[in-house]
Length: 119
Image (cartoon, rainbow, N blue to C red; front, side, top):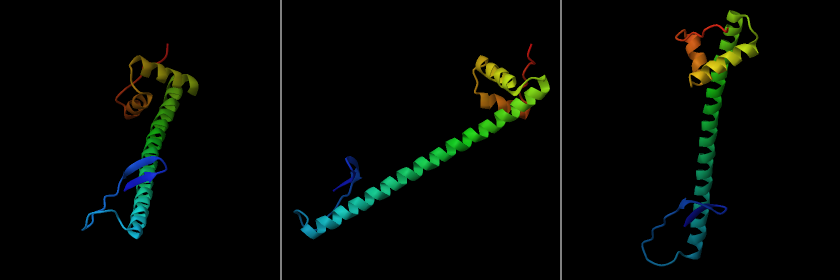
């Protein structure tokens, strides 16, 4: 019996009987109900997984943004430039070296990378 949500087939409910032949009317209705319940379970699990993935992506973006904002402040203070200019210099360095801004920011914060002052 197909497990469906609208037109999308999500899987199949396999039924076994002791005797060959079609299901009796009452059994077919119960099987359909089980297939519908299985569809709901599959859809809920998909939704939960999507939400977990989205939450992880948002947390990663937030963590990256925090590091970038911290480095902007450090560079602005160190070089006596505006935050916008500090970010432009950070971005230009990252592009020139083909690395992610967040990775560059993290390495600057850890002290493993230093940027030359603007000229």
